[in-house]
Image (cartoon, rainbow, N blue to C red):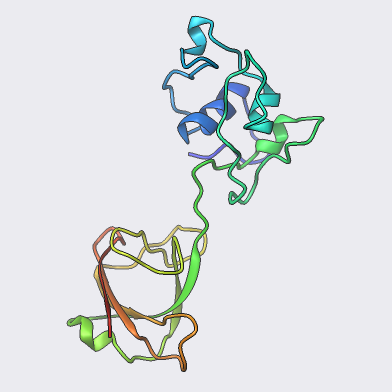
Length: 178
């Protein structure tokens, strides 16, 4: 879960949890500079460490690099401010829009050669088995289970040249060239 949006209270501990555990509210122990729990005295949480990621200074808690794909992220420049973390999502994955034929077909082959009629969003330009599919750029909608087609970007025309199947969670279970 990402850091709260602007207008909500935000805490340094929550920011640290987002950077270490990908969840602002996660209660897993924060790991200190030498790998021990912060509670055990092996490091301190600092706003500087959260903002500058790999530029850590002992005994501050070591943070992973900031995910600059997140729609909102800290700028890393002093002076640092907690407000820079509003809506920061450490495990955010940018999605790639692809033209698709989004009418489910009883047989996957029927989705081949159809004109594309919508855009769906994938984690990378080449959809693969186990990828999550979204029907909105914000990642809030998933398609119904079924067999669909998509256009390989760079193809001539707007007819689908791949077919794929998604399960009831919107996860790709198969991809085949038409």
